[in-house]
Length: 106
Length: 116
Image (cartoon, rainbow over all chains, first blue to last red; front, side, top):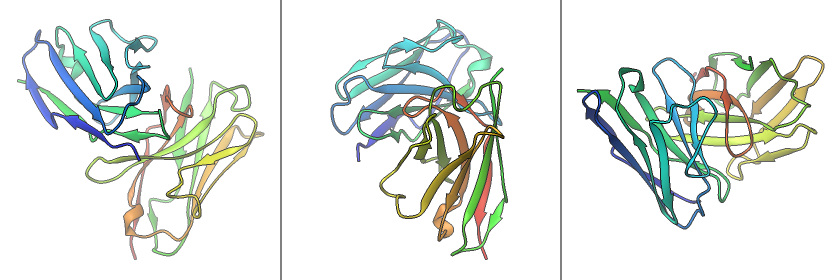
C-alpha cells in the first residue's frame, strides 16, 4: 500500500493568512492526488484533483501543487468558512488517504 | 442537484453482516461514473472499500475482498454495501460517493457501531 503522510495534524491561522498543508507519499504517485475539505457535520467536498486542477465551483484561493512524492494544498486569504478538516488521497495505486488536517481560525 | 444518502442500521453485532443502502437522486447510476463506498474510522483514518461501475462490474479493496459485496438496484437508483463477518474494527462512518478514484459527490455518512 502507498502510505500518505499528511502534516500538520492541526493548524490555527488568522483570517486573511495563507496556509499550506502537505502530503508526502511513500512512493511516486505521478500527480494522482486529490484534496478534499470536510466541514463539521458535512460530507467531504472535492477541492483539487490531479494534484493541481481545481474542481468545479471551488474558490480560486485554493490551489494544489507538487510532484513525485511531495504535494501541498495552499489556501490564500483564509476565510472563516474555510474552517474544516482537509485530507489528501492518492489514486496512483488503488486508493489511500492522508490522516487529515484540522484547520481553525486563530 | 446530485445527492447521495446512506441508510442502514447503526448497530451491528460482531460476526454478523453489515448492510447499507445508498440512494442516489439527481443522476442515474447507469448513466456513467462508478459508485463507491468509503469509510472513516474513529481517529480519522479513511479507507476506500470498493465500487460498482455504471455497467455493474465491481472492484474491491484487496484487504476486504473476501468479506465485501457491492450490488445495485437500477430500478430504485440505489447501490448497496454488504460486509460480512464484522468485528469491532469495522466500527466507522460509512460514506457512499460518486467516482472510482476521485469522488465529486458524497453522502452525509452513516455511523455504524459493531458491538454486542
